[in-house]
Each structure stands twice: as structure tokens, then as C-alpha cells.
Length: 391
Ligand SMILES: Cc1cc2nc3c(=O)[nH]c(=O)nc-3n(C[C@H](O)[C@H](O)[C@H](O)COP(=O)(O)OP(=O)(O)OC[C@H]3O[C@@H](n4cnc5c(N)ncnc54)[C@H](O)[C@@H]3O)c2cc1C
Image (cartoon, rainbow, N blue to C red; front, side, top):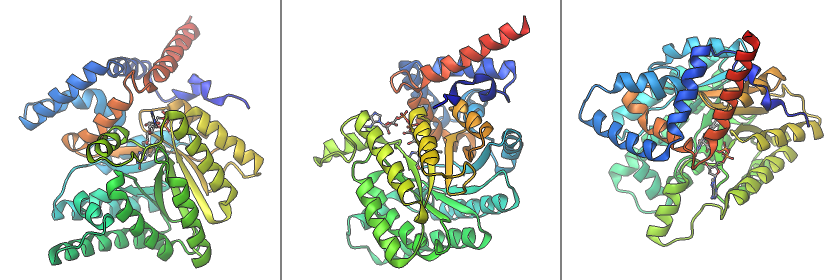
């Protein structure tokens, strides 16, 4: 198959020379694992101590990985990306808030982004995180089938209502809604709730999408069982397929508590699990829709190949490719240029509140995690290409 992702001219067509240099510098910095570790600790301390570091964060990682501090800020980026046919998913990335008022605020923000999506072709999906709508411990308790106190019963009722409000709105406005996957110990309760939403609102097509983290070895079986239920009950399955972002946390907890890790035994096993699941969904596309959230070139090529094998149109609305803003532009822009459906997650929120998100990105881009060398090589290639062009 033609290797379309190597075209750096298309990948960075929206970046000025200065922006290209800034991205190169940034990835050079976060390639250094000890620096990321120290930087993370110092930044967290500085934010807690109310030291004026927000400007520095904004000028570096924040502006590279986020669309702005508010949803309105993001619209400039949304429009710019769409000039190259790359769509956006506005992602309110405030994390770690555990109060009712904040859950309600997240609900209101998600409703607002559904409204934004309704009005704009450039925003095909809305998204939210289950822990944005309820306490992680509560999900965990429900997942473990522990009895709830009357207060917790009422609290869970409010979580269910928040889910139902956004899913119903998404359905009524015909905007697809992605629901992120998080730690495995909260995921059972979230899955059950999302399944109920799919059954209720995915009667004509996939509107509500759950997430499968394919670093978990049990997910393909889970999907197969869900498919049986969906076929019997007559609803559609929307799934975002990712590898998963909490591997270290998962392994540490499993070891501490003495249960088998839910994570595949090796990177290769995760990759195989990802590919098998994509294939399974393609085989059952009559009842499914895929949002392939990955920066892995091989996985993306394989999905392109499967689309060709099954005679699926590039613009078929049941298949979307997704990357994060600030990463893997070579995949996003070249896919869009070649006519595929592509959307980038565009995170936004107050600088200090999106820190957990930014720290995850910095960590997955260290030299150890291995993403950076590819980003750096691409940026280097494009800088050289432009230099040669100017001579
Ligand atoms: C649009 C989008 C949406 C996303 N939404 C979510 C979400 O809802 N929930 C979530 O958790 N993450 C989400 N992510 C993050 C995603 O999980 C990470 O970006 C992803 O893990 C990176 O993997 P990759 O597919 O890009 O490919 P690669 O870089 O090829 O894979 C890296 C991943 O492989 C897995 N892995 C690495 N080493 C091992 C090992 N030794 N054993 C087993 N597995 C290993 C890990 O998951 C690691 O992150 C999303 C990403 C995108 C692009």
C-alpha cells in the first residue's frame, strides 16, 4: 500500500516556520524523561503554591496540545484545521474534580459542545469523560457490586441523569457522542450505563460511542457479548478504539492488590488485540461504527486496507480516524488529504485544570514511550525540506 503518512509538506501545511521550530523544541524537551519527571513535579508544586507559572505553561505545552482555555477560544483552531478537511472534537479536559457543582458544570459544558457541533460541519462529535459526571469511587463501588448508602443511591441517580441528559440531547440534535474510557476499576459501572444509553438512543444508528481500551485483554470478548445483545435487542454499537492511557497505573494497582493485571502481556499483544478488534468491527459494520483513536501508523494503514477490502467508501460516516491535537499531524492531515474522515481531539479548559491531561501527553511522548523520535524526525524532515525549497 502507498505510504501516505510520510508526506511532511501536507502534514505541517498549517504550521509557519516559527511554529515548526517551536514544536521541534518542545518535543526535544519532552523526549528527556528525567526532565519530564522533574518538570511535572516542579509544575505541580508551583501551581499548588500559586506561583505565576501559567504563562510559561501556556507558551509551551499548553498552546501546542490545547485549543484554548474556553470553547470559544478553540473556534479559530477548528476553522483553521477544517481548511485542510481535518475535523475537531472539542474536549473539555478538566480532570480530577469531585464535587457535584463541578459535575453539573461539566454536564453544561458538554451540552454546549453538542450545540457547537450541531451548528458546525467542522465538529462532527462531542465527547465527555465518565469521571467528569461522577466520583470515581462511586463508579468503583457499583462495579464491585458493593451496597450503596441512601446518599450514594441518590448520588448515582444524578450521574445516571447526567448521562441520560447528554445522550438524549445528542440523539435529538443528531450529534454523535464519544464517551472516554478510563481506569479499569471504574469502567464496569460506566460500561453498563453506556450500554443502556446505546440501547435507548442507538436505535437507528450509532449516536452514543463507548471506548474500548485494547491494552486490556478482555475487551474483544466484551465486544462480542455486546454485539449479541445489540443484535437481539436491535441497537447499534458505536466504539472508539484506543490502546489505552493508564497502563502504568493499572499494572501498579494490580500488583499492589494482588490480582492479575488487566493489561496485555506485551506491546505486541496489545497491537494484535487492537488489530483483531478493528477487523471484528469491520466484519460487523452493519451494526457498528468505528472511531479509531490512534497514533499508530500501522493500525491506520491496516484500517485503510480493510476499508478497501470490504469496499467501504472513504467518506462512509461509520468510520472515523482520530488523533490528538498536537500529535501525529502526519497521520491526520494525510488521511484528510486522501479523502478519509478524520477528527482531532481539541482539549480546552483553564490551564491548571488541564494539567493531568498535559502530563499524560508529556509522559507518552518521552523517549522511553517512543512516540517522540517519530515526531522529531518528521519535524526535522519538514524543516530541511523547507530550507532546500528556499534555496
Ligand atoms: C482520538 C483519541 C482518543 C483517545 N481516547 C482515549 C480514551 O478514551 N481512553 C484512554 O485510555 N486513552 C485514550 N486515548 C489515548 C490513547 O490510549 C493513547 O494515545 C494510546 O495509548 C497511544 O497508542 P497508539 O494507538 O497511538 O499507539 P502506540 O504508540 O503504538 O501504542 C502505545 C500504547 O501501547 C500500549 N502498550 C505499550 N507498551 C505496552 C506493553 N508493554 N504491554 C501492553 N501494552 C503496551 C499502551 O496502551 C501504550 O499507550 C485516545 C487517543 C486518541 C488519539
